[in-house]
Length: 112
Length: 113
Image (cartoon, rainbow over all chains, first blue to last red; front, side):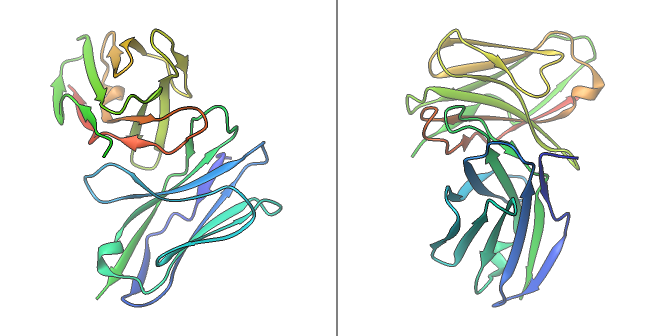
């Protein structure tokens, strides 16, 4: 079993809809959680980070963390075709380590 | 903006060759990382470094070595390239162990024939 698992996708939503991306992680001392976006042929870029239980909102993006259930999710409201990309979930097991373990990614397509 | 520069976008090498992948960051970051990305396997950590002349193994270090002689430069070395090392290699940096945001380079697609 992988330490960080994501829905394999692909996920397809119509423009304007809410896209929901999910990530579960193994039971280790995990402190920090990140969502990276990777466009085809490009390198990943950080879009959200979350450190405590609950929701964190940034524009159209909301990250949700539930440590008891060991999952973190990313909601994209009012999805746009420009949101079409692969979304990578990353977990840092120790805040002093500074290294991330990544899930395989979920590919999102937003159809006009 | 932080810039992480990888020396080559595409590289083709022969089996058994020694291969150097170079990475330079311009923001005085302490931490540097080398990942490889393969379809279905995601991003996997090869080696990382928290300081000059310091290195630590990641999850898949076999067949690789690294060098960090200067703070801004982190090199990945394939001592004897093999076909199973054909992959996209991504270098990343972060400010320090507390600030965990990773900045990635544009990647090097290495093909070993």
